[in-house]
Image (cartoon, rainbow, N blue to C red; front, side, top):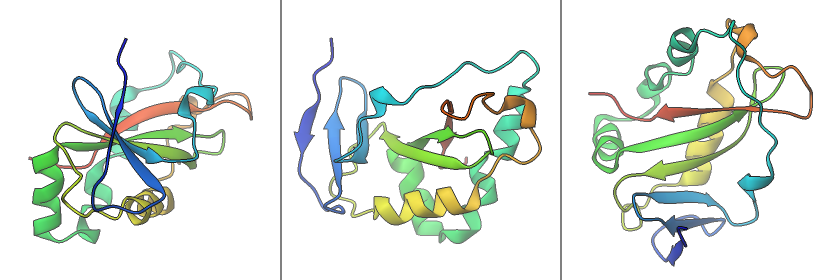
Length: 143
């Protein structure tokens, strides 16, 4: 069993960093992601097409080169929860390297992701019930 360690750092006060054995999880203080009801994707869902639709390349132009390098250095990705309409309803971040001294505004980053991403083309990947979500990982860096 992995027990998270709370770490203080330069970040929005609504977020906390949980240190696990292999990564750093950055999540809102008030959200319990273990209670989100997800469903598996149907066999009709093309994960290749979904990866293309939820690619960092779609929003990379919003970040300058230094920020993109920073994202790549900490190997940050977002775990998103997508609803029946294709909108991202919730998300948290996972970093391979410690983000605590970097000063990323995770609230602003989350808002950008929620506003700019929507599953519009791959409807077969969307959850079938209103109270369920699909979860997906979006690496926020490119090589």
